[in-house]
Image 1 (cartoon, rainbow, N blue to C red):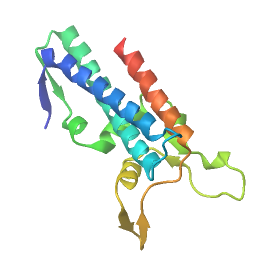
Image 2 (image 1 turned 45 degrees about the vertical axis):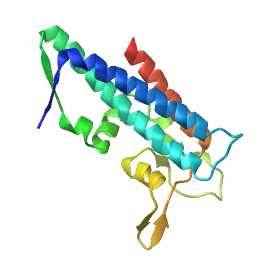
Image 3 (image 1 turned 30 degrees about the horizontal axis):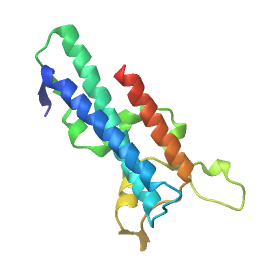
Length: 167
C-alpha cells in the first residue's frame, strides 16, 4: 500500500532526513573519538552510520518525488511504503547512491596472511549484530570485525552524497 504525502510537505521531510543524517554522522564521530574509547563504541557507530545510510536513501526518494510532482504539477505523491518500514529496502536504494568501496568495513583481500575471513559490508543483519546480542548457530553474536577508518570513509561518502543531493 503506498504512502500518500502532500507535495507541499516533501521539503519538510527532506529537511528532517538531512538533519537526522547529520546528527547520526556527528554521533558516529563522537563514538569513534580515539581520545575517549568506550566498550562497544565502534559497533554502535556502525549501527548509527547505517541509520544515516538509510535516511540518505529516504532523502533521495523524497527529492525525486518532489521533482516529479513539480513537473507534473501534482498536489500529492505516492511513496512506496517500504521507504518508511523496511530497512533492507532503504539499504538497497542507498547502494545505488554511493560507491561500493565505502560499504566495506573490512576488505579481507587487503589483509596480509595469516588473517582470514570474509569481507564485511553494510547490511541489515550487520546493523542488528552491532546493536543487539544474539544467539545464532550455537554461538553468541555481537559486533563485527571492522577497521574504524572504514566507518569514517562510509560516513564521508554519506555526507558527500547528501551535500550533492541538497544542491
